[in-house]
Image 1 (cartoon, rainbow, N blue to C red):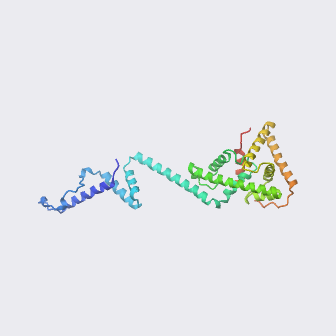
Image 2 (cartoon, one colour):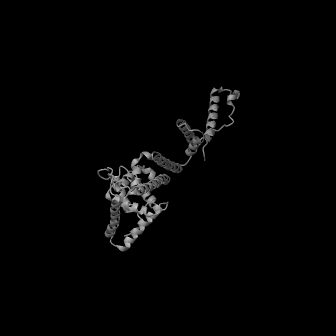
Image 3 (cartoon, helix red, strand yellow):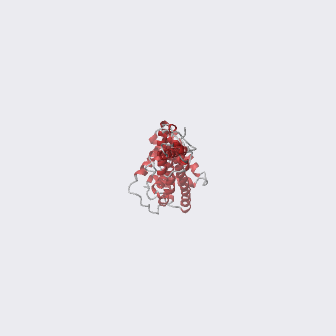
Length: 319
């Protein structure tokens, strides 16, 4: 039964008035008592007041005053004080869950707001697209599924609080931001491919424009993007460019799988395809620009991301 603090306080006040009147009245003639002895309209006999509830009432009042709780918040505390112990545990746990959710959402919003300053995160997204181990750029939920799994397992590399990865709402908000940024990056890459084709950029100039400063650019990266530029030259330039590129990569992988059952031999054939694309590009557009200085060695987060991309990001599991 819900305990109402105001009613009990009024009853206690009436009881105090009665006690004071009795103490002031002459013991020999109680019938001559003044108005103070008149029973209060809200008179509550002593036996009707539960001492435990009175104690809770004082504690509720003092606690609410200490935290400056008013109106409905004070009533919620009053109601909570009258619950059974098991019910209190449920309410407390639910409240803690709500706090955890709110903190995770706040962290996700903070990530979105401050992400412009988190250069490593943006570099990782660009490397995700530039990696020679990438097998799909937009098709289906491949990118989204890979991102979700990778952030959950490697949240520290992605500069995300672990609590964010454990809350579905916060995680969806974070993924939405990252996927939107990936879309912007793909549009920018298409613009750079168009400029490279129009102005006959050499491979070094193309990679200098594509790769972030923190990225370790290898010959594998040059081979993959020589092949992609060749594909861009002979393909539709509209919105279907990336889906068509994904389909071509998938079809190529499946053709090689049927032609060559050995996995190592199949990988060598695919590597040869990219090597020939780079050689043809260098013959067509001799190297003029100097390759931008890159780190002496690939940063560990780049190595790890590209390795995980090779293991977990593909159209089909071709044995």
